[in-house]
Amino acid sequence: MNKTILCIGAGYVGGPTMAVIADRCPDYKVIVVDVNVKRIAGWNSEKLPIFEPGLDEVVKRARGRNLFFSTDIVGGIKEADIIFVSVNTPTKTFGAGAGKAADLQYWEKTARDIIEHAESDKIVIEKSTLPVRTAAAMHRILASNSKKLHFEVVSNPEFMAEGTAIEDLQNPDRVLIGGMETPEGQKAINTVVDIYRHWVAPEKIKTTNLWSSELSKLAANAMLAQRVSSVNSLSALCEQTDANILEVSAAMGMDSRIGGKFLKAGVGFGGSCFKKDILNLVYLCEYYGLPEVAAYWEGVVKINDYQQRRFVNNMIRRMFNTISGKRIAVLGFAFKADTGDTRESPAINICKMLLEERACLAIHDPQALDNAKMDLDGVDGVIEYVDDPYEAVRGAHAIALLTDWKCFKELDYQKIYELMEKPAFIFDGRNLLDHAGLYEIGFNVYPLGQKAMSHLN
Ligand code: UDX
Ligand code: ADP
Image (cartoon, rainbow, N blue to C red):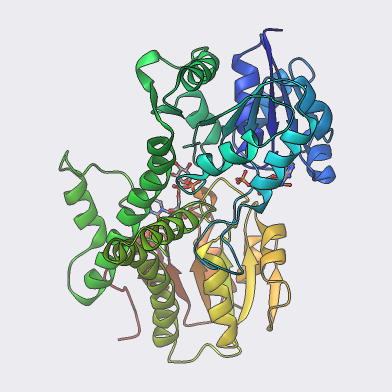
């Protein structure tokens, strides 16, 4: 083996990233460690702890050959020359910066583990999203070791999206590697470049200084989320006029300067990154005395909250101003299709608002029901978690479609119509379904940012 790579944190980022690195770099030994014993057992089993298309095959090819999952963090630190850190960095819930700044306790704990157990120099790579200048703090903590070891901090942010993680990792638009502008920093950058050069073309590997690399991750996510909030804000205007958001998005997207991606109106963005990263950006701007810039980016999150509230208000208004005691089938709980992940999913807030209005919920999702149960644990109200979509809609007054799972398109809506109370309502929060066809069956159809199709007036 050429070198040993350790990854601390076997989550949505660490697991798939290391699986692809091991798969593409058979000359490296890759060890993935985590404090969570159950998670590691999952990675070593037939049923991996996360659902991600294509992940199973990659893991099966490399596991036991040069990819190992373990709870032996100390052993891993001693053995590896290169350490990726992909522990979680949630938004702080307490103290200074609560609700906005990143909670770095897991990161700092990891840095201290590295100092305590390392017996040789290491390259420490930030993989988790971190606020700009974290590397400086890490550098200081790592440099404070009394063993006279040298730790070089490199930033290598992850740009993969869930649901397409394996494809994004195998075929990235770019790989970003930031390091200190010193000879040691440049050497460390080159060590990380060598890993990616196994399968990524040189022109796609971009090296920068540490701060640019850290900020680029926040900036890219903020720009993507901003597009979603922009199009969602326009969807509200479309519903008040005769404009159709699908036509408006298509027309905007044909402008090559704008481009067609990330212009889909929906119930709002979710996922572990967008909200957290924007709030992080907001916090940084406030910290550096830039309140106007902070307010600008905070608006992106506010529109996202507004879009969810707007969706629920529309449901209530259309269903004769009350949903109390009415059964509502919620189709989709994951924050997007092809993942079981529900972190920051718009479905969480929407379901809570529906429950506050005393609706009875029957939630169906092909992958995310276990997470949905945890997210709504302790919330007052009637909630059923249903594996069969046809059981979820039985006796329902309305369907709220919240995730763009392809399989929802293939359901038998004639049968669904027959199973539901009448008048039957469909609120398509992702503009996924064939609205004209549903209207013909008899549904009252409420797409997003488009004219309602109702038999009621
Ligand atoms: C995002 C970034 O895309 C990725 O580069 C980064 O590494 C992590 O954060 P992810 O959160 O996995 O990835 O999913 P993404 O595909 O970006 O979708 C985020 C949210 O925006 C989802 O809830 C999705 O449904 C929503 N979205 C996306 C829209 O509502 N409309 C769109 O047009 C695109
Ligand atoms: P992400 O989406 O960023 O990958 P996850 O929450 O899915 O976030 O994964 C982060 C992982 O990091 C979790 O499995 C958690 O148990 C692990 N973790 C957190 N702190 C430590 C630590 N000090 N040492 C090892 N693993 C850690």
